[in-house]
Amino acid sequence: MATKTVSTIKSIINKQRRFFESNATLDVDFRIEQLTKFKQALQTHEEQIYTALNADFRKSKFETFATEIGFLYEEISYTLKHIKKWTTPELVKDTVVNFPSKNYVYHDPYGVCLIIGAWNYPIQLTLMPVIGAIAAGNTCIIKPPRTSLNTYRIIQKIIYDTFDENYITVLEEETDNNEMLSERYDYIFFTGSVETGRRVAQAAAVHLTPTTLELGGKSPCIVDKHVDIDVAARRIAWGKFINAGQTCVAPDYLLLHEDVKEKFYKAFAKTIKEFYGKNPEDSVDYPRIINNKHFHRLADMITDGTIIVGGETNEESRYIAPTLIELNSFNHPLMEDEIFGPILPVFSIQSIDEAISIVKQFEKPLAFYIFSNNYENQQKCLNNVRFGGGCVNDTISHLANNNLPFGGVGNSGIGAYHGKHSFETFSHKKGICHKVTWPDVPLRYPPYNGKMVLVKQVLK
Image 1 (tube, one colour):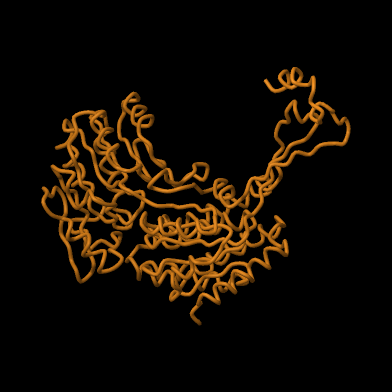
Image 2 (cartoon, rainbow, N blue to C red):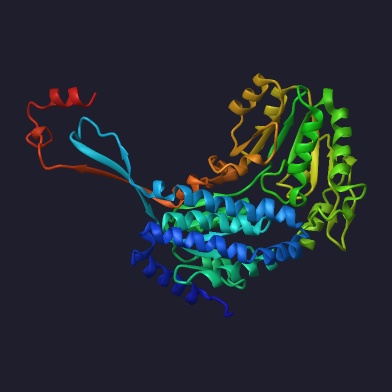
């Protein structure tokens, strides 16, 4: 396949813009047909997806389906069920000023969308936004992540085999990101690091292109003393070690009440053994770090702390054991940036108030987790911490509900998607006031002499 240079990127954008201007995508039946084709294509290539993700991460079929493919199937099914309602203009109340009138909110597609995926869940995070873009009536130019190259190529095959490139296409892996971002799109949806997100936002600002940025950050997990220790240990370990910790909403650090610390450590060690056996390196259910660069970045951070569980590494297989490490200082490499690996630093706390104070020292996180059976402590956390989304007495599960928006705030992102929120993200809400020609109230027209009293009575 030929490399897509700036000129060919521009050509693709122009072709997609012409296709969009043909109004073909405005037909809801067309959108339904494309979503149905998309799901069928994913089903056809399902085994190839398993193979690609195993090659990139040594990820099991179960985890691939549960965290990648299954999400897409559910999202498409949910969208197909509701799309006709979503695309129907929404009737809203009129006002005294415009009486009599009918007022509607129309959902207009933006046009040509650039969707940039992330390497850690390359199928889900690249293709989930595409579902929303299709549902809203846009065209799509997709840039999967090069880091997970095997998955990049299967995404490319799925899209090439299913859609006309004038409607939806995938850029070549050699595409230069700076050249790609120098072009003008009608919407940009980016998932990835905070640093790259800033560059995307700067490029979008040149053309005043609306964007969604799905970023990350250090997502805290608080464990109160009023808690079921065994359940907390299982759910935290599950959320942390899925995909070997390479998850944007994984618990990034643990704030553990000192009254339950020793019990939690024992429960956590027991949980790791139950999940992955005596030696997690031999488990078919435990993935690997994506590449040598990230392996060395992570391995070098397992230092200057007390290892409670794990700590073992194997450079040859890019294995890093599920690791719980107790730290005494926040001035530690593990606390500088999002870890994005199977290492969970833990700090002792004496109260929920102390935990909240610690969380507020960092940027607003993408996710937040509180384990507590004390309602007052739950609400104190939810009301006093700003974050994208999260769970009470669980981790990660908020992603699995199509009715909940998923997205960050501040440093962890701009905008949200999933379910109807995806449709709305890729739609411009267009307000329309539809009036009849009679009566034509003269109050608003000049001359205004003597009308002030009446205006004040109407516009209270």
